[in-house]
Image 1 (cartoon, rainbow, N blue to C red):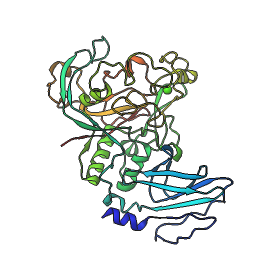
Image 2: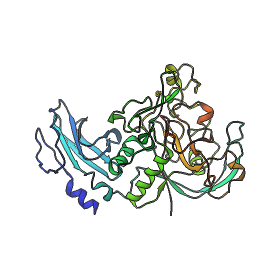
Image 3: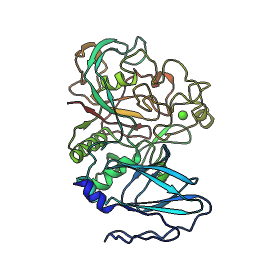
Length: 395
Ligand SMILES: [Ca+2]
């Protein structure tokens, strides 16, 4: 049904200087046409929804609703892909030199929850084969040193951390208020490198508590609690008819270690070469916070969050498992859990005051960024370094 609605609402045009189509929506105010660009330019108009924009295989932006943006291309055939939680469309556009091409898409937000794309409602997911592995690491640091065998069933995992843009869709459609919205704000990094709880800071803000420009909506969402992450999964499940959830701690580690291999970080063991690492506490961060302990000699180019997928994926096609933001897992945290964990598909302690987080963040030095390191926090806590990704069982 949604395909029919989508098709009816979608139209696109090639033109020079004028819009030929006059389809109107009662609640949609058409933006003014931009000035005719110089040289070869492709102009994209996307209505009523957020979406990733790929041009010739490369992500070039994250488009906000009712925003007219221009993307420069050379003459010839341009391969365009528009995708978000509800749709994934590709187009070939014959771009003529010196012409302005306008593409209009109508994907009304009030229809979106009922017109969910069942193929990729959560963004791209990677299938992870099940298997057994030795969970934990023999190090006298943290609570991961009780190495024990674990078996996980096959599951799907989000290739990327959930972005600000994806979370914005959720809030836009559901009207959900996060823990930060409901009171107190969130923890942000001060110039001193320490944290403070700052009022009025929520998922719309960056790591320093400043409002995010829409151009940063492809960064991972932060300032979200475990409660908020679970609410997102529930909404996604209701809207898609599938069962999205947070990964278990055992699943997360299994995936980050490329199905349980003995790796120190998602990129491998030891220091990353060149840009083949992740966004961790690095030389860039140290230039701003000179007393930080970092991955010495490694420069990832980001002090705070980086756009998701800025670094190479691991062998399973998963990005940013090490670094960028801590990722909430489904489990209650128990420092002694590894001593009593069931072997088959462990799901964490039955109760507790804190939930598990994994993977380290832009803030973290080597020991905390290890794929086996267990971090934890109150399920209502939120900060500028905590986000999440979704998972799904394979029935
Ligand atoms: Ca960094």
